[in-house]
Length: 194
Image 1: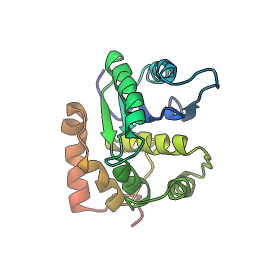
Image 2: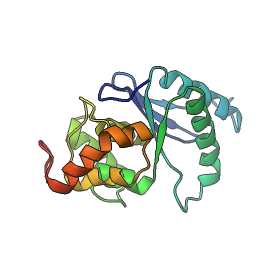
Image 3: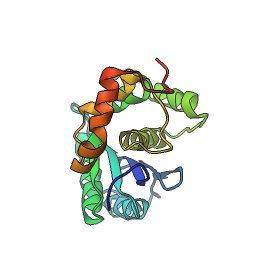
Image 4: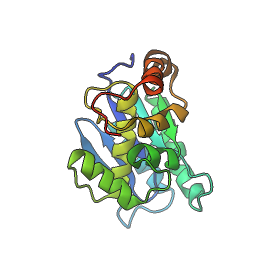
């Protein structure tokens, strides 16, 4: 599948307690578990949810593990299952450090969960109360923005520059980010607010 401005993008915020998903035609979901599903059994549920969410997708954007996070070991298990599901589905993916996602969404790498929610509400009028879904929405938005997607929300140049720090799949980097880098370097983007 080639990647272009019409490519379906999935945003994934990994967690063993509530993996956030943004996919399809603006669907937001959180993979949660009943009390009967505990420990590593949750990994199978996450795997199934990812397989369903990425059906027909051409790009996935995943929040990466925090560099010094206390829960990185547990979240790392979810990360591994998600990456394996994407590899099996042949969906290229990009990992985004939490600070980079926050910088993209709010302009500050140390933004709080409330700041992320407020940025989403201010840009889209979406009042999403689940932090996992908020992060997944911003991850998906970043992917849409990088490929020039027709539904991408316009953001200020300083926030969009956060995308340039990421390692993108070759097709995205070669076809779409080079002209974007020129735009960021040389001009303010149309429709963006400073």
